[in-house]
Image (tube, rainbow, N blue to C red):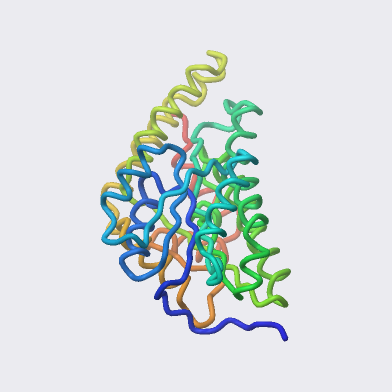
Length: 294
């Protein structure tokens, strides 16, 4: 008999969450643990895991060394989680690990694009595949973290948007393929939230532009720097907080019937609405203000 989605109170359920070292993933891991889940939080460095463990309210949070791009690391982490979960099994997976490459697409090298997709898309697929046999046994749930850029591709976020659109399509396919087995799949789309990621985005973006041929970089530099400032200001002024993201992931995990998509923040909801309602020409005119050469 095929299991169907049921109301899923958190008490004691085993959840795996990737990308828990900092930012939204860290906040989410701590929130899920406080709400009663047993959280196996994927981190890439042991010291990040120890800091996370120190801030947890109980032993329900357990850091696990996991690099989603490394097959051996994934095999080891999967075995560790499955062994610790025991008869209870693994019930939930939150694919949160990701990076953001921000630069004009003309300045993004194929190697940089491959690295972006390897973490944000291929890594999410690999982790899902690793835990699916266990999620089928428990009738569990997968939550894939995308973003508002997964609905509308903004200029200078082309590499990131490529990965987020791919993750959206991957999530749709998994949701439809796994439904007969009682495993539900949903997407959480956060908008702009003030986290340390924006400092990394600015630094990496400036580095990418500096490495591009000078005549190409000069074409974009002024508008790209203007875009970075606008992005940072939007994140700082956003009323959306990391805890809003964490609460939304909790809701996605515990809803009796998971929705296909959950939006975090007004900007994420706005992007979703614009993608449905406006023709491409109208969106292009809107973004022309960002890319205008002055």
